[in-house]
Length: 347
Ligand SMILES: Nc1nc2c(ncn2[C@@H]2O[C@H](COP(=O)(O)OP(=O)(O)O)[C@@H](O)[C@H]2O)c(=O)[nH]1
Ligand SMILES: [Mg+2]
Image (tube, protein in one colour):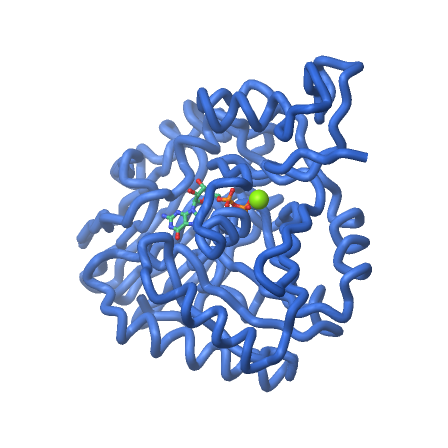
């Protein structure tokens, strides 16, 4: 059966509205991939979703291969509290922490290196199957050389590119092969089945991305997903306060702070979204107007209380992260379906 070169789906000529449609089986790309890469048309994205079970089934067929796990750098901030690597505990793995260009410019490469070296060291004490780890981003030039030398050292020929949806798996393979054969996009669910690629004496396997139930990305509607996804270097938004204040990221996230001493909060989110600040007394009013208006399943936000003595970083996967410094009480209102992580990492 012929498969789409961009997303791996089986090609078919019968149903125009179903995945894999082509007018003529001579074509290499399904209509969705063709329209997406030529016109940026995303209308076919609505119900794309490959179940995690199906993806695990693909993984198990390649259990003797090397698994290159690609992780979005923002998710990597809480990798130690994530169950992602549990799925790969029986495989040989290489970690690629990708999209490091998203971290703010004032965070030096040395600092990023130090943070993630320590993290990978700790993770390997737990999993003992991490053969190497690389930090990279789409602008980085040395990656290909580094990557192939790791494959040579490990003497691996068959390589599965795995991980969560939208981490940059297909983009990374395109970069390694120096072409744009695989379809990539800002939406999750671009790759619909495994794609087998022969390259020199290697076999590379691209896979669909695992859905993360702890991420806002899973619950936002398509439009809001696009608006809140971080795709450029973050410019932090900093606020100082000495009186109680409420901070809103639309109706998606609310942080109330009652300072005991001077306090500051810094948000690391998509630069086009501006945090709205109100006096604490007006917070409920604003919240009533805006809560969850963009979320797929409308539910009120859950709340968690914290007492901060020095500083703390919170990660809200799919939205970004925020850091609070000072002595204060904090009440975070975030989507209960997703998870609010307290991160050890000090960016
Ligand atoms: N800023 C940034 N964006 C990236 C990088 N790598 C991939 N992307 C973007 O991330 C999105 C998802 O990429 P894709 O390869 O389709 O992810 P996949 O679902 O894991 O295959 C696309 O919009 C890419 O342009 C990177 O290193 N930096
Ligand atoms: Mg992909």
